[in-house]
Image 1: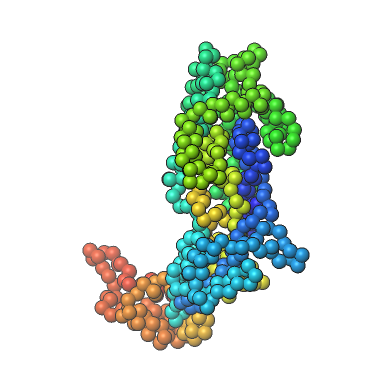
Image 2: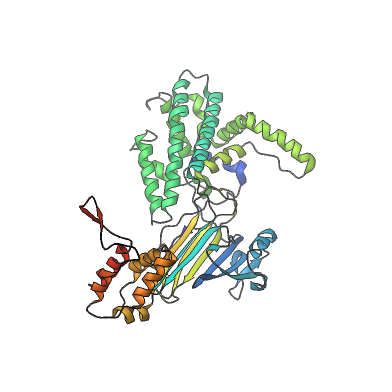
Length: 498
């Protein structure tokens, strides 16, 4: 299932980020496929229960009407085409309804609707934060909408967690290798590679994954581009040779999922380890590395090592305590720590729920001046559409929507200037300037504008206007003429009139 699909104002659609599929055989079985799990993480899940939210926004002057339609469904439609509704979480339902007037709530067989009017701050209903502003004056109005949905803006914190996971994964792999190969006289070379190079490369892999995932929100084929770029990085770092590349691509098709033999890829991993131990490739693979080419032996070896780690023993001890209060507590598996670190490294939930879905629709009489949504000319709406991570997922940036628009008062402008002079960015900037004036200067300017009539002297009258107490010219050191507080609106209007 796609994670984010942003829609642009020009109607184009961006790339799709796909969520990993839950491996049907569970974490224990998946652990034996650990070497492959870092290669392929993009299976599509469909038909799973998820929440669906549609936010409809209608600006009305200083307030914005917000209608939230939400429900939970299993992804399959009934015979009549309606979603197969399921019970909505009671805690989340209570949290949403608390943010809307009681008379604005309805429920039709699992399809909930909440309506309300808001000024400035928008309700935290789906999860996030948003604001709305409308700046109106005699020449028109400018509106601004921006909202984030869920996610985490702490980039530094997320980077630290990913890099910590890379360190912990490296420690586990290095510890396992030492348990199996530490007696080999060539092991020091492998340990150096794992402890330094692999540790560093895992952090770069995490950064490439994160950046590719982020850019995929906005650029088609970004995931593919970043995969190719990281592939070149691995080639430059000596993980495979150019001659090995055709076979490697075929072997990396995640053989265990497709039902084919994983041994070719295992043998490539075995050969990589041998190279890092100083084998130039001409000699037979050392007998000590035989277990790496046997899926069963490798799984058994890694599981045995994980079972003896301090981290697993600590989880077992905690489980024994938890079981006293909850006899149904599930026995932790040795591979849990590995999968937890893989999830942290990539910033994803490998075994989590299907993402929720969000659509935001902002109704406007004309296309916005700026925004990151898609303009629907038929419905006269700015549209955003995306899959949305769960409320507690703190490993992704928020999904953000923004739009600004300008609505000229065509009748007033035509009556006083002979035509519509300010639209788009010019009107937006004018509205921002006008809203920043105090009551005295704002009143003086409004009275001046209201007294203008179309004619040849419009530019001269604009040139002559000054606020009370404002000199005709501001001179510094007898040389430089500085603009006064009335210069900006006068010049803005003069440029359009001339």
